[in-house]
Length: 131
Image 1 (cartoon, rainbow, N blue to C red):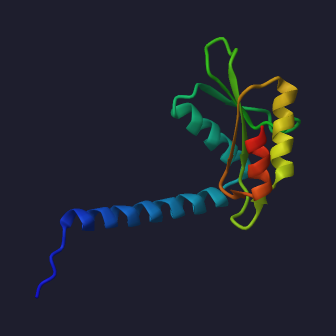
Image 2: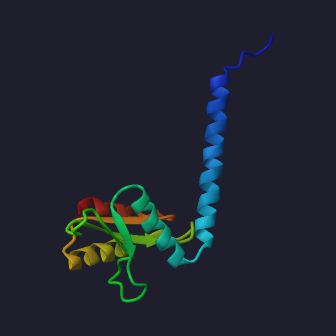
């Protein structure tokens, strides 16, 4: 007997496979670029996504902040950005998240986004949840 194949199922499976391949390719490319370019890409992405006008901070003595997104034209409500381009085998620990939290406190900030292509440890996640 012939097997009945639902064409929508086949299309969904192919799309899922393409999405996975695209994500893997993108992550590999992001891991290979210079860390300053990664910071630029993250701030540009948040800007294009409509969060506000973005700007990368100075590269040194940046008070542990990689960018700022001005949510309003006056710059009264800012989102501060931390972007870490670690390898897939290096995690973001509690101390790194705590450092970012301290940098936000130093700015009197209410909002911050920490983006990585790596992963957060359980300790980092638990610390962030308590904030």
